[in-house]
Amino acid sequence: MTINPDAKMDESQNGTEVYSTDPLIVKSTYSIDYIHSYAQDSEFFRALGKKKLMGSRCKKCHYGFATPRSHCMMCGAETEWVELPTKGKIHSYTTCYFGSEVFLPQTPFNLVLVEFEGFDSLFMARLIGAEQDDMYVGMPIVARFKRLQSFSPTDVYFVPAKGSEKKPAGNVKKKKR
Amino acid sequence: MKHKGRKVYMVSGGVTKFAKSTPDMDFRLRVKKAFDYALNDVGLTLNDIDGSVASYFSDHFQRQLMSGIMVQDYLGLTPKPSKRVEGGGATGGLSFQTGYEEIASGRMDTCAVYGFESMSHVNTWKGNEFIALASDTNFDYPVGGFYTGYYAMMAVRHMHEFGTTVEQLAKVSIKNHENALNNPYAQSPMKLTVEDVRNSPMVAYPLTRLDVCAMSDGAAVAILASEEKAFEITKHPIEITGIGTGTDTMRLADRPFGKVPLLPNEKPSDYKDLKYPGIHSFRAGRSAAKEAYEAAGITDPLKELDAVELHDAYTSSEIQTYEDLGLCKYGEGGQFIEEGKSKLNGKVPVNFSGGLLACGHPVGATGIMQGVFMFWQLQKTIKKHFKSDKLQLNNPKRGLIHSHAGTGTYVTVSIMEVPK
Image 1: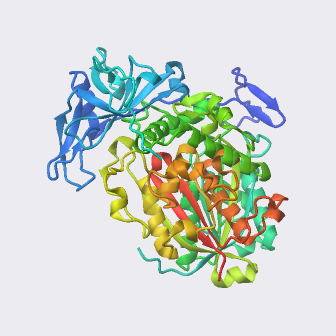
Image 2 (image 1 turned 180 degrees about the horizontal axis):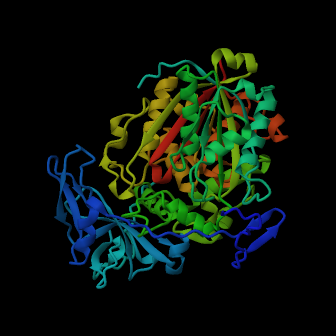
Image 3 (image 1 turned 30 degrees about the horizontal axis):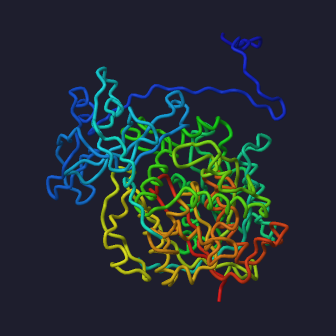
């Protein structure tokens, strides 16, 4: 017989963090390890370890993607892997002084969208070696690769090209109004 | 696209006051309050509602999946038909349009669209992280991981292409926070100067804290009905005469550099050298406007719209959206605010309520809140609901509401009109 009218549930010694009793507000924690597959994007992340920045080009309409995708958004055909130049230009930029919790310790950091000769779309990356006021649209920049790969898009980052200092005037095209 | 369904009307609405945190009420009770307000305003009971649409963005904020059915259950709407709709920041607008489709298709005669978000259960920077998970987690999230950063790059490019200035951005913030002074539902009404906006902490250049909307807890409900039912329920229903939805690539980096899809009041020569949309404009906003204008028969939006409630999560987005909606040409958005054309007494008041910047942005509720405020505006019942008629426009006949998801991936435009 397994019937036991005196059965007692085990007590937890963990305790609960309580912020307020009315309304009752308690702390609850959630964390998880994902088994994340880069799937058809894998080659991009592998190539960063060989100091190669990979994009893709449509086999049919030849649209060039600086951020690779395995099928073309213009015509739906398959694309093939192609190496990007390591030199590009700033298409746009910002400096983030705040961010998501995981990135807060890295602030301030620069984000750039990079344009490459011969490619139709852009690539987003971090830029170091320049501050907010140093950056400008059209600034020549160069890709660099981390020595220790973490298989993240941040294995590649950009720095200003030599001699890319802002000229005193005329960098920003402004329409008269 | 031609819309061939039945006519759809909005008959009532309700909104809770948006706040940073309301721990004494959970999302179910907040929706219940907005829902009861809407029912009571026109004397409806639960039996009068045929079904519903649940609008909320993130399961992460509360670590509760299926929040939609929990609201359906709490409101007493089970076992009636319902579904959840989700599309980032445009969740509210998409849900509003799903409600429209339920009526237009003839499936329902009355539909309650309820939206909510509880963002206060995590701190602001964790919240930003959750929101950033709505960007491509292979290529974008690990690099930037911050929507304000993405929008900041769009703003920088808009400034580069068109000469838009940070002072013009600040003027959007000033206008919307000031409008909110007379909106009792708003989270952060304020009187500001350009200096206040520019001197507040920089979040991501050029956007300061006062260029960016806040996170909120809140709920909003819109009740939609068929023509026959609508006029049974109220003497003053508001017709929804057109809906439009546009989309764009998930990654900003993938946006093409093509041609502007023209509105009837534009010509190809207006944009000879403009590469579109690039990252300076929201192609989805333009597509949504085009579809909605065709359905509603609008050919000159600036003349034919009396009020606009648009998705100003960032001051820069409001300026970009003036252009997408064709209130001015591409490149003239900065000038549009500078000249006061979108002010309460301007050519077309934009965000008379205070918008997201001043009302707050409990994501799933936001697009529906816009519908409710526009409904009251067109019904001329602002005084009744706001306890002040300062935001009531003189004789508004037609309004536009606009809802927008991260970097312009989903955008909705819906046209609301006083029935002729």
